[in-house]
Length: 202
Length: 202
Image 1 (cartoon, rainbow over the protein chains, first blue to last red):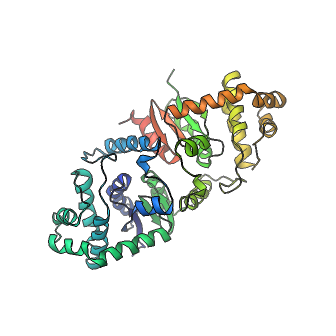
Image 2: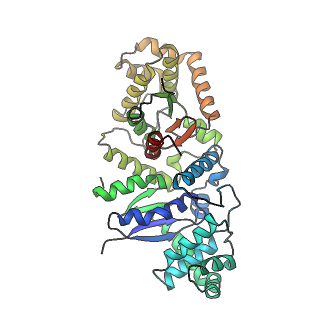
Image 3: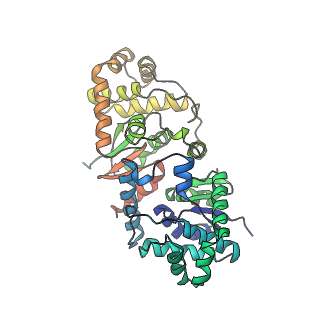
């Protein structure tokens, strides 16, 4: 069994969404599995790095909107959510993700995919435990049980621990991919990730 | 004659340096020429965007150093300059570049390549008119005349006008490539630039 490739993302990150659509296929082409980790840009970017939100940054905000639209067209996606829209609170999704990872290991990717789809494709606001649990139901999760789990102190602690662990590894952006300890930030580095996996690195 | 592709860079930008090594070949593969424009990250990033220098940003600074080292290894380069080293004042190089572009059009790329080589490969500090002019001499420029030019009010005005023009086009980072009005930021987007040129865009 090969060592997993770690994939870090935030549910509200547009390029994290693109990455989530591609990372498993990319790694599978090189016989590698992935482990998914949700993190919080609000902690890494705003609290630790001391930066303003990306979309509120002059010049860069406009570029990001344009680059996102270009990425949507390139991938042939139809999304109801745009980066400029009001963002949801990503913590209920993060809590759900880490609770499922802990208690139903192996199902957290299916949960994440469903939540990302509900947010980006369907444009739902999953910023409450009710909404996140309801969206998860379509992927076969028990809605009431998951809502209770999201609201639990344990889920909050699991998310905090995961965010702390991501920061300790130096992860600050979404997406970030760790290949055998080597960090790659941004979906635009996926060409580099693929070359690294194909050649064994440099 | 095809419309030129605009390439924006700052002399002190490590990824701008990588991009300068590759952009002309990339565009030539698709029958396109390039126009080079030097800009100043100190103006776009610090004054307009209100951000701290990249290398002083927690977490991101460490990542950038690592990504740069990886880029150096991948390209088989041997550089005396590292992103963590004391940075030169990029204005003398920028003034020289825009003065040559104005008065000896067609020679500005050769000048830029020589200055980038002197800074990154040889590790020279080109932060004075003397040093920048001296480094340019190896590429066939008249050292004394170029030093006088760099110190002229005209060169200062040309650089300021170029920086203003880059900001008006929304350019904030180095490298940025403008393909028929479409901006691509970062050397990691070069795969996307190549695909755009090959397909005509999406």
